[in-house]
Length: 452
Ligand code: GLC
Image 1 (tube, rainbow, N blue to C red):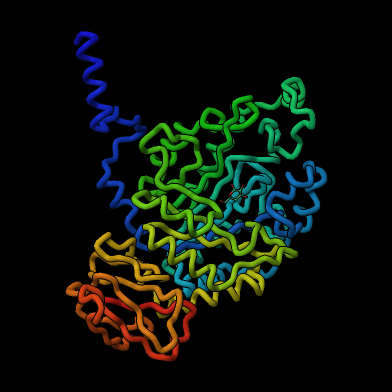
Image 2 (image 1 turned 120 degrees about the vertical axis):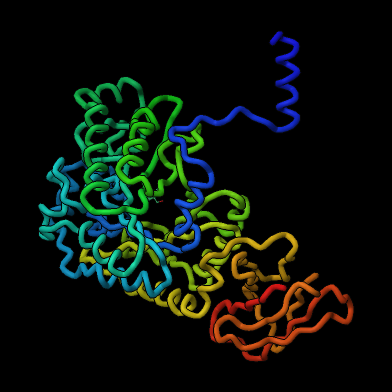
């Protein structure tokens, strides 16, 4: 092809929006991926668990970084770690009752401490007063409740002697000069740390049966070279290893493999407001959210989200085609504290009556306009549309805009009680739904519309 023809072809591709196929690591088709992820997409709601030595400090899981603590200074949390109230069966039941379909536990967070019995380190739960593999107990308990089991594994490691010091390491040099980094990293060898990670991930994905999700966290490439990304982790090789060991597993997007079509299974908008979720429509995603500001147990953090805020996160996620993973930070004794328990109980109460508006649901087709102030979720298989009543008109009505001829029955979801509707006298395309004066005892009640 001559140059003229080539440029014409390129121009045509730009105009028609054709692009060169993105690189890929494996050869899974879109349909195969969809099938592999079906349980996760349908489940919509999961539990994140951040638990480690930082739970004892009880002031953020980044305490080692925030207070620039070195290994010696952090040792007290290891020495004191004694989760005498740890009862994973109770955790699993709580998750199940709250309506969650899966869980993801920090097997190792940035601090480097392992909740599992790894052959490759002494820095693990078996060497604390716990004296046992806590990951194994978690896996058994959650599986027994019929929940899918996930592992979070931190790519960062602020304890490992070969993990090089970067600009978020607790010991990162104050002057940030290349010379200081070089001096501090003498004797540290990332190749050895990479092997350590591969060994541990191999253990996690070999010794505990089928693992449904792996949540690797996180990449922070920097122009000045003092961050970390795909080459530091050996991400491509790592993802191949993971897929080989657990072909069905679902992998998050923090390995810095954006240039590959299959470098991740889902996006992970973290702690974003509900207003931001609409932009993820059409993608595969899960928003991760805390009850308060911290992931690890934080005793003195008191700005906890309200029940309504938590519900809004769940409903808004589903109404934009995504998942919500809600985090619990158990105490160092191994329990969910009263605030977490109360929050989860409130979700359990709502989900018990309304989960049909969450599971297997997504955003509604454009033909259904969103009634004012409310949010919609939609189940294509059962042909149901759910109106989440954010504002309850006292003894009033809700206008369903343009719904005439589109629905055949309306009822509250919580008790299946019929709701009457009629065409709007002002605009026959609209339907007017009449609601009882007394709001059902749910923060956000749901109307189930059976579609024509
Ligand atoms: C972050 C934080 C971390 C938390 C995670 C959860 O990247 O480093 O502490 O585990 O996000 O999404």
